[in-house]
Amino acid sequence: MVYEKLKSELTGQYQRAWDSFGMLVLDVSLEQLLPLVNRLKDDFSFDLLLDITAVDYPERELRFDLVYHLFSSESRKRIRLKLCIAEDESQVPTVTRLYGSANYLEREVHEMYGVRFADNDDLRPILLYEGFEGHPLRKDYPMDLEQPLVDYRK
Amino acid sequence: MDYKSPVSSPLEHTADPNHVVVNVGPSHPATHGTIQVIAELDGETVIKADVHCGYLHRGFEKEAEHHTYHKVIPYTDRLNYCSALNNNFAYAETVEKLLGVELTPRCIWLRTLLSEYNRLADHVCCLAATVMELGAMTAFLYMMTIRDYIFEHLNHLTGARLTYSYVRIGGLANDLPEGWLERLEEILKFYEDYIERIHGLLDRNRIFIDRTRGVGAMTPEHALNWGYTGPILRSTGLDIDLRKDSPYLAYDQLEFDVPVGIQGDNYDRYYVRMREMDESVSMIRQCMKQLPGGPVSVANPGVTLPAKDKVYTQIHSLIHHFKLVSDGVKVPSGEVYTAHEAPNGELGFYLVSDGGSRPYKLHVRSPSFAHMGGMHTLLEGYQLADIIATFGSMNMIGGECDR
Image 1: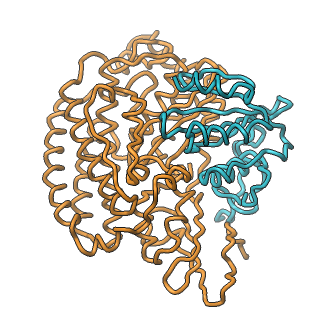
Image 2: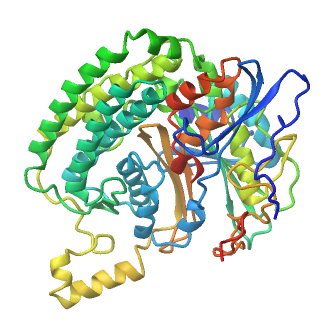
Image 3: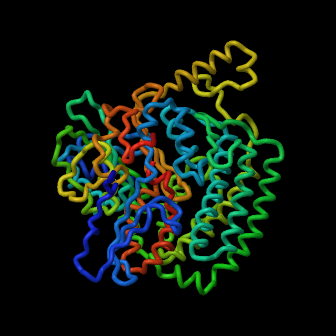
């Protein structure tokens, strides 16, 4: 089983491994992320980065969960990596050097949650527009707050 | 009043004075979607391209956090609006996984059948738009005719041509109307007749080949690096298909091939989609043969809405309906990622529940968004006019890309 092999060979490179409805989840710390992704890509051919997103828990000290989904074209398995980061964390490593698809995904997480990825110099808004204030997917961003780019017609 | 441009591009100033920066879109007659391509041109050759999306962003994920699980279904229709049923089913399965609901056999087979039927409509629509932009008007009209028959037919089943909202958590809104399967077979025959003509019009057409062969080509490694999935990834020769690799619904009981291309160019993307439609038709026929009887929804009062005729005549059904609609389905806390093979690629829903009746977080892994993230690499080095051909074959759907 691929997951068993992964868990035993990568021991020490993650905090905790658990199963989420048939998918292997590895909880990692901030320092472990980049070396782990590197190994997953090189040794286990997790060569497709499906998704990066975040989950906001405003009451927690480490406010955000960052969630990565990877896919291996060899074993056809998916894996999820999770790490907790503080709101003002500025040292989240970028994975754009490893995956082209991370460009858009990191831009989205940055504008929606305000997570800064170190060494990623293209964090322009992608779904929102220049000058949008706040991060709409944070729990404290009000649902009905409007910021029209062009004023509504009277 | 002066308004600032909503996007800033690194290409606003060119280093070479002979280069020109051209803006294609966001509302351009030759692109079927609201997207902006800012291109630096040397003559007619695209040197650099910068692709901007987000013009159809409407905060799907934020909205979902404020609605009960059933009320999110209409929003999922509007992701890839050419194949709303595929979105419906992927979303419903995500919630059902957390709930631990086992679907009825008839529901599983019907969802499989309808997934393939909607895939057929989506591919037909994508190909029609692509070839129309390359000037093939007859093929466009033929394909739109097929699509319209399918939409009218789905309208008969669901009550809507495009935004079906046909799924319910734990089942489907209603069973098939009388005579629906007979009409389905008629439409499949009609499709086979027409698709033959389209093959004849396009496959060896000199103009079509010149515009598509070798244009926007890529290697499998390139496609994986940029997060491509679905027909676009398969056009490079990799047979990665969720229906085969991790079968969901009834796909493990169906026989089908995974068509792949050779060099990942526009022509391959066209042909992979054409072949996939044939596979879909074969799968629909298998589903029709094996469709079991029985109810389409699970008999679980905590999840399934009561029948309408009972709501209007029995007080306990009315209370039951009221509770489910106003309070919503309670989903146990946890997190799950479910992916389906949508017509465009891997459509994934990442759901985090805190035990309440609204999602704590619902994220969509939309294939189009990933496809747009790497599209500039397929434009650079080609001609300005090739933007239209490549953009068409990538089949960007604004609703899904921008969410």
